[in-house]
Image (cartoon, rainbow, N blue to C red; front, side, top):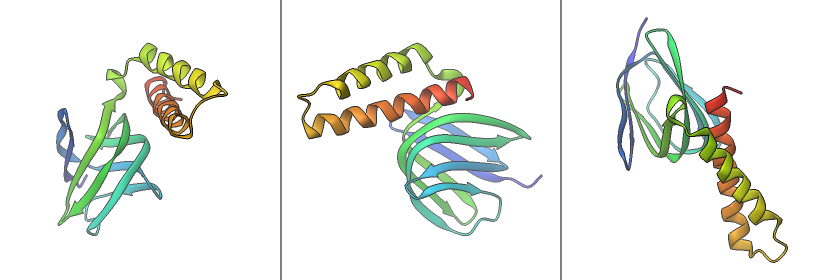
Length: 134
């Protein structure tokens, strides 16, 4: 099958650098799938599941924030957070969900803290979904 070069980097380093047959990501405007020979394209990433197909096998990851760029057939993902499903600490994600829900239940929470808690909750739910395959 035809492939393209995919590089996935985060502030912590390189998560992947090699051939891929397909990648799907959540952008700020919805999901996008990239196949070989995709037109040049740049967009901001949202929060969601990423799927990377290599050698006919699909790997799943939690991808949160950043940019996607397709340039001359090369695909680069610069993510704020990118965690392969096997590397996600499910208990930590569940604890983060509980902490966010507790903060959101506080009647005296500021608007700023509410927005932060909502984002924390969404990140925790994405990680749990990817880690459990649900």
